[in-house]
Image (cartoon, rainbow over the protein chains, first blue to last red):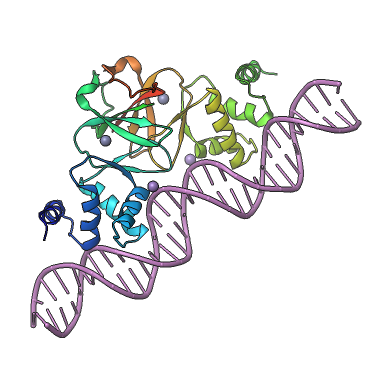
Length: 133
Length: 133
DNA sequence: TATCAAATTTAGAATTATTCTAAAAACCAT
DNA sequence: ATGGTTTTTAGAATAATTCTAAATTTGATA
Ligand SMILES: [Mn+2]
Ligand SMILES: [Mn+2]
Ligand SMILES: [Zn+2]
Ligand SMILES: [Zn+2]
């Protein structure tokens, strides 16, 4: 068993996700040490290229589970398609409209300060800055 | 003819949109002097309540035309539904996730500075700050 | 290792938002 | 009023996502 496989199994277990075959396979595609932003279609294509046999429903199930478990972050930049981000640290995004592609902006490259008072009883879930270019 | 109606006709004409009946009706719902964020469904409901007879396709056509003409600004905060914003001045948003509702944040209530360098040949189309609460 | 209940995966149907089509209606310059 | 052009519309088409329920996999236990 490759070390990488072992790491992925533990990553899933740590997040209370049973490390089944397709979950490990999809996690293997996503968590390869490189930050990425993927659509469901991207994952289906990636899986097909690696001869991983799965279904559309499973890709949806798995990405949604990973997002709920905090292994992925959902990024909404256009209505219609969802993107999932493997970079979990605080950061912002360029969105290349013509290419329908996201690129990270390190949090230190944008200064967001002086947040307004929140309405009663609310807490911030996220602060997202998207620069469309 | 009410003054308000006249204003709306001129607003459309100024933006090179022929002031047809349904366009004037939908513009009347939207441009009443109060900033608002509406979904297509909201507009259909508003129209129905005012006994404005129209079709789903026309609401889509009209909102898309208004957005292209710069009378509305499209706001993307969740995959699935599009919001249209009548507030055209620079500002940001709270998004109330549980209520699926937007609220404006005046631009002076958030300080966004030190934007990063843009990739070659790109220009900023918009800078959107969304605070999910 | 064999058994089996629970969890997962899956194909295809269903749902939802949006766009497309092409026929009918409205518009407006003459 | 006429008639070419634009708009409106109902319903079909498309596309992303979720649902359903049957088949498969998983992993604890015997
Ligand atoms: Mn693709
Ligand atoms: Mn509604
Ligand atoms: Zn990112
Ligand atoms: Zn707004």
